[in-house]
Image (cartoon, rainbow, N blue to C red):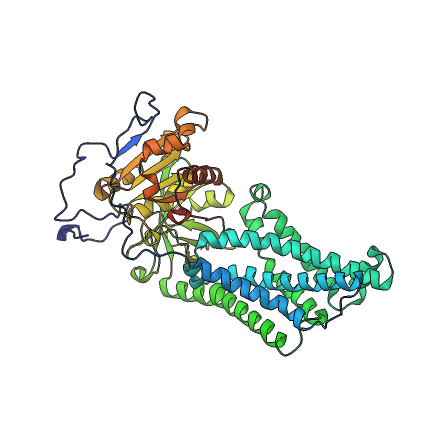
Length: 502
């Protein structure tokens, strides 16, 4: 966008960073129409809502340089590695070696053990936080695969234990319980392997949404990090007793996979954060109240113009206060990055987040990231729909700065006083030729109930299936929106989710 010289100035704290219109832009045909409305149900209106919006356009050609995740190649590489790990057993097993129930059970146990070892390495690779992996795959797919592989890992580990113990029990003609005790107490590294299995089951249980929602984030995150200990304890067992980890090919495959994962962990968890913080020296500049239980943290730093962050991304922030230095939380940027400051917007939901509102200017910060592909560069259509609920407005507010004309923002809140950035959103909407629609009320009120139905969403956004849709908010809101979008035949490639719980 071209700007007048007087508007090409750096923003100060608290200012809205938004581009002005082009010198040669066409007259606004909607001038005088409010860009932001609290929308209510209106059955007498053909759309079902008392509102107005942009005209429907048929020009839905994608941008010139739309990007997408390289899902197919990543999936092929994953299954190629999985097939390779299983083939180690096949190449190491002679014909006729499986001749009774005991040898069959032992074979199944060894195969599931190899699969479990491979899945553990892939899980840790996805937890490494290396920037290239998120850019290549996409944060949404990483989250889904992380959950699916986590469940698969627990199942294969337990299957490995059951089949191996049963096979040994048949061979020794002893009871299963007695044989399990003998294995644990006599075979090398089996005590550490048992501890690793217990930790893995614990991680799996606390990752269930119902359990995760009841645990403090800090405790959940700490327990989740014990996955590294699972690798350390479990790998010793594999090396000591693994029947298919030796041989000319296996002695290359497993060390190479180990080296890849360790290198990714060192790079993503150590090298990149050290470089980021040494270069930018982040610190708190100001804390500004925004509304009920909500405040913004403005962050200062060096060379912010070179920070590789985009609107819509999140970073992990560790505020080095006396009582909070040990806690790291993911917060999205609530304004597009600029050369003067960064902004986070936090809703106080616990003791740690409440204390952040009391931080003094100059408090040092340790940051990691940026993470996520919840950015305008992922668009596949020329127009967009942004849907936010609760604290999900933070990345949506930032994204609006990068979105094309005729973008529609739907902001869901329980009460009018919970609407954050209302003035900023409407100012941005005016500048960007966008529209903001607030759906306010409890989930049982007519308007909110109507919103995530096919007729309700279509009434607000008639061309929804020709837009990219960005969703950020509580899981219930996101799930309801995704279900409605699929009913309206919006392709998955046009739906972008911010999985900040990862």
